[in-house]
Image (cartoon, rainbow, N blue to C red; front, side):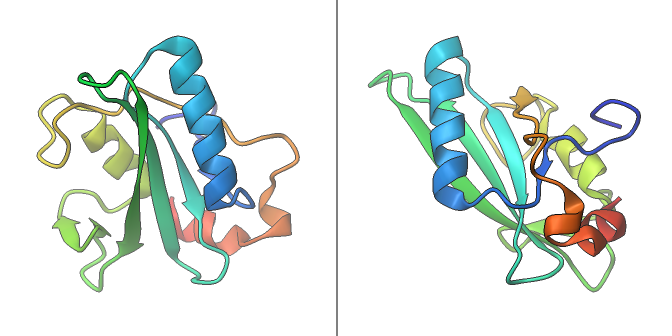
Length: 134
């Protein structure tokens, strides 16, 4: 499991898209890294998530953020941007897969996550999302 003690520290419950972009951009600019990510639970769509990633564009040296829709398919596997990952029956498994340099979705692996702030807890949003995703 990624995180400490099995916690899904990459799962943000109340972080919104604009805030995620700002956090990712700052972290990528400060570190010079590519593949920094977080997952947002979509409050309005229970069971839906967004994977937000900061990439360093090699040509322009600018940070580009991408957003990908993630949800559980009827088969039980997680889908990202409507592409199923049959072996990924948890968000942890999907993240592990995407951190592998040989993943078939991105040209580079995810590298590390931005942990959710201490003020961002499951009770404020959709605790059921995290439990069903584990």
